Length: 333
Image (cartoon, rainbow, N blue to C red):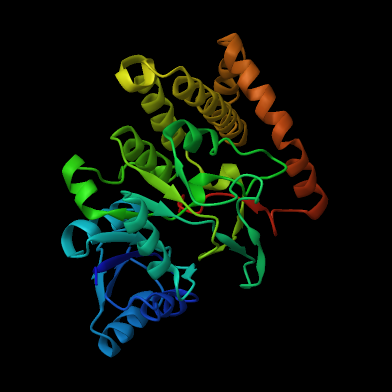
């Protein structure tokens, strides 16, 4: 059997961490290790993980002295403790179906791939099943995913905010990561999954995705402005600018270049909208006016994203606050 290292970054996750760990330990593929990186939690997360480690030697606890974010926490788990041939990512408030690793490994061997992922089953905050993330019309059976398809699959629509390949939690060949010296980008707390996936695909990773809903993804509420940082979005913008300008794989592939330009246009709208709204909220009106009037394209980005956000803003005003919110990436803690 192949050893699989399950990496769990955890921050103030005492409500879910024991369930998350047990879902990994109860896999039908038993040759696993569960590495939990406690990211300087202020609650009982580390204590609960320590109890699990005392009860099962397959559980390992690493504790960060300062909060460094999920990307750095994952990197520490992978680089310092993981011994497996495969790296499986599990968020601290999510869970695996019991057969997940066994089924993904079988598919990975059959198709000789470097990365494999499934179709996350979305759960409510209370743990009730909602729906599979990807509709059957988008993924009818196991298929290899190209870089262009992955990037296009991250430009989600407001009416379907939960449909995005970026929410996938892949299982990755350790050999592939080491051969290409790939890690999560630690400066990002938002979008680090996207950057990591794009870098893997541009290094030639064969990525298979299956429609089987084997990863249980807990939906949490929030808003774009509360979770994404403009600095994180700017790093994504700069990465995509470099790819469009300098990467020979991108410049030689018009479909891939088009996908990156389309995704970057979406990120540009988020970026300038966040900068504008933060300036207004901070009463930096001169900066807000400069963003609106400095360059015509900035005004367009802010206007378009404002129109996208209008229903959310109206709902907030009606409710008196973001008590329920909309789905966002959860890594922006």
